[in-house]
Image (tube, rainbow, N blue to C red):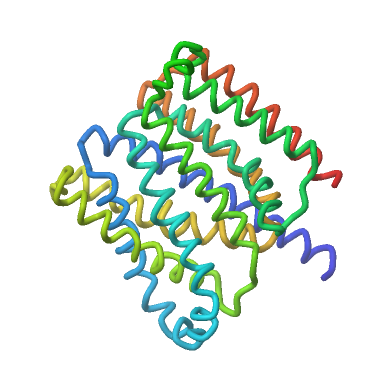
Length: 304
């Protein structure tokens, strides 16, 4: 590969990852607005991916059929990818925003690049070292400041906000997904990979959807739900996932993970301007430790 092609590929990867981060930041804002209209979170996620699947199906079904043997041979990996990304992470984001601020959520999500390093090491996908482990510890401490609101009494009583705690689960789930995405190369396009992940994720999302429809809020087919669904299907649903998968494919999980930091910037700005949220002192303390952890991990990663 010549220098021009190499630079062009990296430029494309950076553009893909910036747009993915922007669309995912918007997902938090739209999710928070949807919670104010009591749009059911698991149902929203179910229809988000159901419509995404149907939109992509005409472009993917032939390639899926041609590669059915590969899919069956690796179905365990696809199940994990589907559950960690489609079933768990996306559902938890909408659920968490019922109870916590967008700023708190995106600060916790900003630690994902560090956790990608951690899980990539556990799964023996990429090597890690002591400095990266210290980066994980610092980031975890930053998350603790946020979910405890820097109040030691909350820690002692273990009275954390359930939205914050569920966002931690989502954070770890997405990191596992991103790390495992590099575990194996597949003989089909990125859009087909996304469709396969959606299919496996939806299988496990269906029972959760029916539970919510029977015991939780029900969907009201009015403009708040229609507009929310339209955004989450197209932008964070289809475009962002395609851009993220392609970006990882070009520059790798570790470098791609760094671009998730942009979500914090985009999301915080939109949360302050659109939702009127405030950047609290505990956010500031958490951010200091998170930035320190991320910086330590990334600096070591470059030198490794």
